Length: 441
Ligand code: ADP
Ligand code: ASP
Ligand code: MG
Image (cartoon, rainbow, N blue to C red):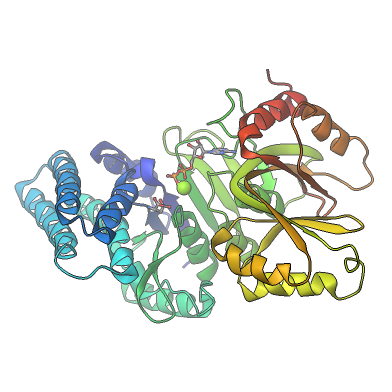
C-alpha cells in the first residue's frame, strides 16, 4: 500500500475543537499514517513538572500535574458527547496522570524524565483515536514505541524502523487510517527516549522514508515556509517551492517551522515534503522536493545560542595537520562545527552545542591561543546562489551595513551565505535583510 504521511503540530491538535477538525483533513479514501504532536503547551508543562521533580519539590510537581490534569478534563468534556466515551476519555487521562503522580514518590533520573515527556503524544493520539471511534470512523493506533528507534549513535535506525513499522501495519490490511505519536522513540538500549523538542516533524519524515510514502505533509499554523521569521519581522510571504537543500539549510539554521534535521530522511528517500496550514487548508503551502528552483535569494533564518571560537597560532596555522588536530578535538568531544572562516594565522568557527566547551578549550589551549564569544546568532541567507553570478554577497552585506558582522561564510554551498552577529543584533539583521533583499519596510 502507498501511504501518505500527515503530521499535525501542537496548535493543530491544541484544543478539543481542533482535534474534531482533524476529521475533515484526515478522513478520506487515501491511505495514511497520521503523526500527532502533543497538544500545544503540554510538552512545556511536562518539562516544568520534570524541573520540579529534579529539585525534589514534590508539592510543586503535584500541583503542576493536577493543573494539567484539569486542562485535560476540560478537553474530554468538550471532545466527547456519548457517556460511554466520556468515561473512556476520563479513564484514559486518569491512567496517564496517575502514572505522572507516581514519579513524585521515588527517585528521579533522566529515564523518568523521558517517560514523562512522552505522555503528551501518548495522550493526543489516544484522544483522536477515541474521538474517531465515537464518530464511527475506523482507525488503528500504532504505538511509536514499538517501531521508532535510535541506534547507538542516536541516529534513526532505519532498518529496524522500516521492519517493525511494516510489522505493525501488516495485520490491518483493511484499514486505511493509522495514527501514531510524533517525537517519542526508544534508544539503542530500548529505553523510552525522544527526538528532541520539535521532533514530531522528524518522526513524520523518518516514517515517510521507512515505508517509502508518496508524500510527507507537515500541517501547522502557517501557510508554509516564509521568506523570513514572522515572529520577528511583520511583513513576510510564503515560498511556493524549495529544493531539499534549501529547505534543509533553512530548517537547520533556525526556521522553526521545521525541525532541524527533518528534511534529511525525506531527501535521502526522495519523498516530497509539503508544508500546509491547518487553519487554511486551501492555501498552497510550500512544496519541498528534488527540484531545480528559481535563481536568487528565497529566505533568511536565524539560529541563536551560537558560540564562536577563534583559534590563533602564529606558527602553526598553515602547517599541515594543524586544522586536522583542531577538528579532531571537536570530534573527540562529539561537537559539530557550523561555520568556519580562516585567515593566515587564525581560524574562527562556531558551535551550537557548548556542553563540552570546557574540555574542548582545555585541549586547544595546549596547541594555540583561543578566544570565545558566547550569545552569537547565525543569520543564514538561503536560495539558489550560483557561483558565477555577481552581486548577491554584496547585497547581503550592504543590507547589513549598520550591523557589526563577526564572521561571514560564503561559497561553502551554492545555497547559503551565513553571517555571524552578536545576538543583540539579530532582530535588526533580520529586519535589514527583509528590507534589502525583499523590499519590505
Ligand atoms: P508546530 O507546533 O505545528 O510544529 P511550530 O511552532 O513548531 O509549529 O512551527 C510553526 C511556527 O514557526 C510558525 O507559527 C512561525 O511563527 C514559526 N516560523 C519561524 N520561522 C518561520 C518561517 N521562515 N516560515 C514559517 N514559519 C516560521
Ligand atoms: N511535543 C514535542 C515538543 O513540543 C514535539 C513536537 O511538538 O514536535 O517539542
Ligand atoms: Mg514544530
